Every structure is written in C-alpha cells, then in structure tokens.
Image 1 (cartoon, rainbow, N blue to C red):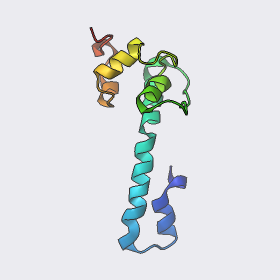
Image 2 (spheres, rainbow, N blue to C red):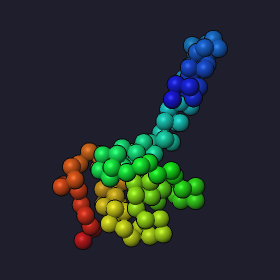
Image 3 (cartoon, rainbow, N blue to C red):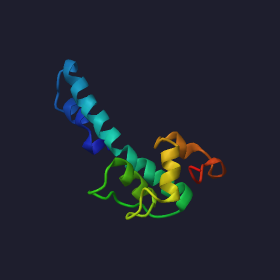
Image 4 (cartoon, rainbow, N blue to C red):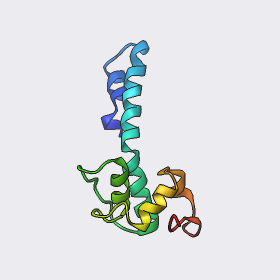
Length: 107
C-alpha cells in the first residue's frame, strides 16, 4: 500500500506540513474503501480455506461483501451466509466470533 500512498508521495515531493492532512485523508479514504475486500480475504483464508474471490462490479456493497465471502451470486440475500451477515449487522467484529458462536439463521 505504500506505493499507492498519496501521503508518501506528497512527503517525498516536499509538500508543506500544513497540507499533510489532505494526503493523509485521501490515504484513509482509500483504506476504508478496501476494507470489504480485506475482510473477505481474512474470512476466506481463516474459515473457508479458499482462494480470494474478486469483487463483482455490478453488486452493491453488502452483496459484494457476501459474494467475496463465498455466498452464491444469484441468491446472495437468500443464503445462510447472507442471513448470518445481516443478523450480525455486516460488521467486522462478526469475523472475530468463533465458528461455534456464529448465527446460522435469523429464525
């Protein structure tokens, strides 16, 4: 990520200290945009032992997260994985819960 850093580039170019926040803000927004992919990669590596699934360009944020985690594309909202994600509020702390403690359905 260092090679893509706007802050590192600005610093190397000698931008004044008062302007550092602009580059830092851009780097922060770039990192936040990558969080769903990072979360899905961690989930697939830890629990599915599968390869990384690239994001689907036509899906919204929640459906894309479910898709990258391994839920079926055509019925992403109907899979047990998606119901579990919806029940957990689509938040990262859900990934820290052990497999035995995860909800399997919303019933």
